[in-house]
Length: 383
Ligand code: C2E
Ligand code: CA
Ligand code: CA
Image 1 (cartoon, rainbow, N blue to C red):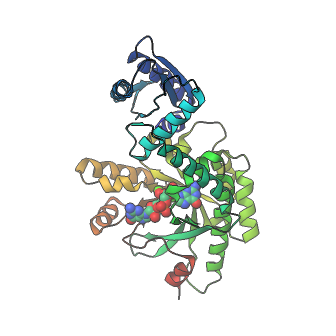
Image 2 (cartoon, rainbow, N blue to C red):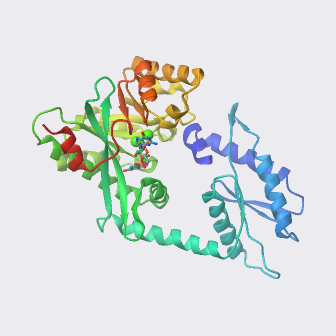
Image 3 (cartoon, rainbow, N blue to C red):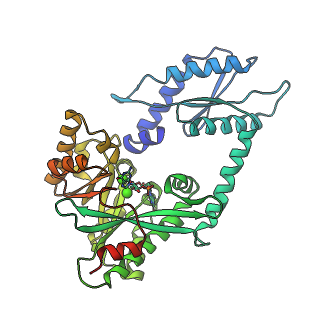
């Protein structure tokens, strides 16, 4: 979770966390073990004269040591550790191959659920190859027309009227079928492919919704488009958005850009400048997944935003009276700041009753509608 800390508490806090983590790592090793930082939030430990069992024992100790929170500038920060173990064959001297194998084992451990360790076996190399293969396919996916958008209605909680749709991307993979964003967005983000993909999403969503505007009667809906942190850092963002609006003819008031709370809280200078420029032209901005990051409610006041989307995890957990009180406080604060508050992930009647009771204006979730094709949106809005 280093990235979350870095994004929401800033780079100085990230550096501090790394230093503390290094100290803690050293604390559980013997003097003959060699710890090193490989980059980012990745560390490596060389254990000489150790068998797999001994390595597993050390891995457990490391994981145990990292369970305790870190004190980063007076804030308690929790992290999770994932470890890949690569045993060297007798006489093996190829460090590069060992690190690569440990990496593949770590990915496997991650895929099996965040915490814990895995020991390298040759099949894992195949999985690493598959990731590379996925990356090269993703590189051509937009060009080959394999990307699609579906749209999920956003409704007034009072009467269920549709006020907007959120564009959600899907990848029609030639062999693996229809993939959700959970399977490729983070890869696109890591490889920088998100810039091209994000621009495609933006243009397609604008064009699709312009199509709806030509329909007869009724209020034309707004379209909400997700922006990834990397897109937010792109200095050309404002131009990309303005070009999409100009070329498709969508009025700026009809576009809402969604940015996660974590990405917004990053204190890199100028990361919100593009949002300020865009808002002056009428484009609206929503904080996505609010309640899932580390940012404080107090920061909300300073963000250049118009809408607040409350994370669906939050609603799923909102059963206790404490959680309900917190939900109520967030909605009241949002309303008080003049923001439109949207409850995400409303699946059941009791959740609807709750979000209505605490004063959310808008909702999104399976209770009203699942994501659908633009043609189905047109039918839904139809005369
Ligand atoms: P998100 O922005 O929070 O989008 C809402 C997700 O919640 C969607 O999943 C939607 O299908 C799902 N959802 C809606 N109603 C319900 C409900 O009642 N219950 C439950 N359990 N889930 C519900 P999806 O389409 O898989 O998208 C996942 C995430 O991928 C999105 O989360 C968003 O962060 C990201 N994403 C999607 N499209 C794009 C895109 O074009 N660009 C970028 N950068 N990210 C995208
Ligand atoms: Ca979203
Ligand atoms: Ca969300």
